[in-house]
Length: 159
Image 1: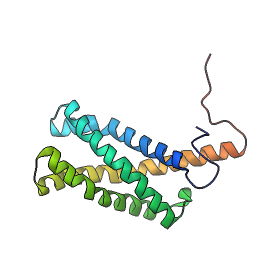
Image 2 (image 1 turned 45 degrees about the vertical axis):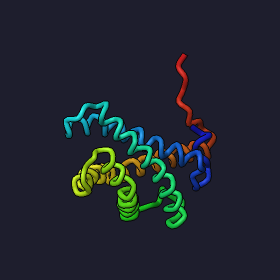
Image 3 (image 1 turned 90 degrees about the vertical axis):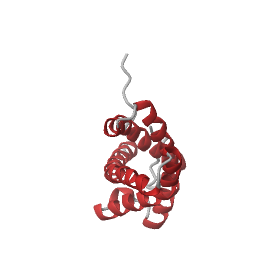
């Protein structure tokens, strides 16, 4: 873990990729069964669509957060609720530009039908992004404090 998190307040490229992958993997664990239950589609069909959306979202996540940190600073731990809400909302609105055309093609559905479906994803991810990023920033700060004091952040091995 220490090779991913630097002592600098700035996230490295490796950490940004790790952050994005963790964000999407946890979302998949939540969304595939939830989406299957809500829509009645089989989990395998839901997984194909959700994984495709996750790839789109991971690329957008990396690019958006890189730009957001340049504009709003990289001291993520000090971001207040207002900025976190703005971050989540602006991320999701930008993502719609990419996901609506994909969903229209994948589902062979019209704009308004897909927009309504995407609205469900947006609401989920707006809340999820705020909670995930706050949690990630807390864990990151904890790891940095331990690293600064020379304590390990590796999980202990059991023999």
